[in-house]
Image (cartoon, rainbow, N blue to C red; front, top):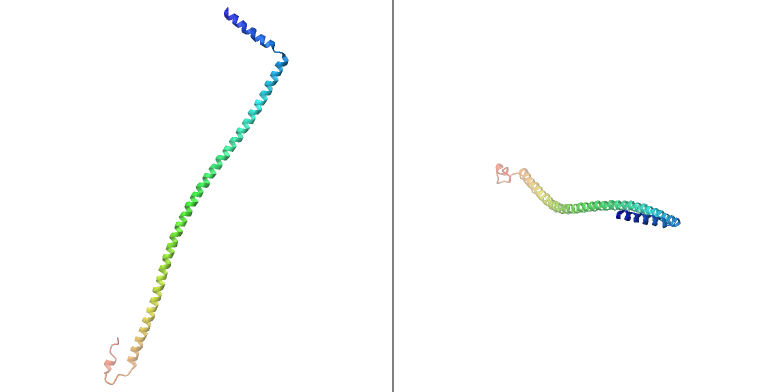
Length: 153
């Protein structure tokens, strides 16, 4: 019985509360609820639109970060290539200087050899002239023909 009494009280309160709301007020609450639902829906659409834009911006930021990383890597590779080229240039410059020195030494030796060749040519020419003179000169009165035609140094 007690349960029946509690159930009857709950029904009476429920019916009493529902019956006591005037229809104008109920209509105003329904309109207010519909307005809040429209506002909620509009905010939800706006939030979804902002979320979509945020995702697009994050994607663009990730692409920029990737491009920056690639550019940094390319810059590092270019810097390494430049350093290698500078080292190679320094090595080639050193080698060029060594070759220039060697070339200068060879030119000096060539000049020395040309001078020696000229001296030897002069000596050979003078020696040949001397031999030719001795052969063509008549023997001296005290020398024999064999001594005059003897070996020439």
